[in-house]
Amino acid sequence: MKIVVVGPGAIGCLVAALLAKTKEEVWLLDKESERAKFLDQHGIKIEGLANFEVKIPTTSDPQKIKTADIVIICVKSYDTKKAILHAKALIGDKTIILTLQNGLGNIELINEVLDDERTIGAVTNMGATKLVEGHIRYAGKGETIIGSLDGSIGVSLRDIRELFIRAGIQTRISRDIKSALWSKLIINVGINPLTALTRLPNGKLLVFEGTRLLMSQAVTEAVKVCRRKKIKLLFEDPLSKVEAVCEATATNISSMLQDVLRKKRTEIDAINGVIVRLGQELNVPVPVNSMLVSLVKTLEESYSYTVAEVK
Ligand code: PAF
Image 1 (cartoon, helix red, strand yellow):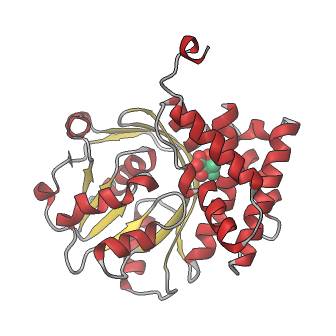
Image 2 (cartoon, rainbow, N blue to C red; image 1 turned 90 degrees about the vertical axis):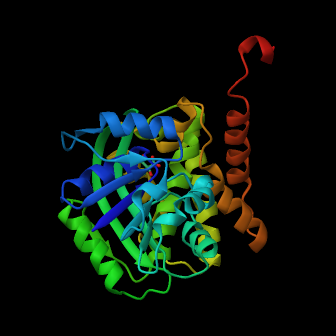
């Protein structure tokens, strides 16, 4: 089976490395040719919950890989469209496409670009941090949930589950992937922007009155939007769930804080930005999410300022 992971970020490298252990043919596709060369030469090193090194053929040229059986999209949500267009040569009539990305709207966007309905959605609670290029800390073994938008369970879903389980990725199929995606979104809404703005690890958000208050307000607004959309969450008490995730991942540097520390664009649009857009559309007030989006965007736009310039 030929499997291509698109996007060698923390989750992309971790998934590719775990899949490579199944002895299937695994490739990494990168948009950046220099980084692809580096990863191709040096391989991937995993530490933490598993410790191993593996060589994975990595390229920026999809023509070298040709048609794949499974394509797993792991790029940042703002790069989805570009990544699919780049990966088009990998996608044949029978290729299974799985999105393992943060935020909402990725399945729909991929389907739109490919003009079909075959994309499988996934939510993962595995924790991974990129230490340096190709060197990943595997920090959490959470469950991965996969499913199709229409709730049907076909051969592709079963194949992915079987493959992931062989790779040691704890996986289950859901008939309601939207519920899983929204549940993860609520968690990211409450944690990611606050860690990015305060530079605190997840657990420390619970220590300060200010971050606790903003977390509760951002989550409450998001849950109202979610209820208006008649989405059923996987948990009864969303704020307690977000707090429990903060505790369970106390020392994690959230993905958004990792982006800010690297002065990279964040996924704020696909997380709190979605709540703001839908809130406005559905007439649900979302002032706290709106403020968090504005602040994170300001942070991104001011990466290059030096203190002297700000004065
Ligand atoms: O984006 C992240 O970092 C993770 O989804 C989570 C759950 C917030 C843990 O760090």
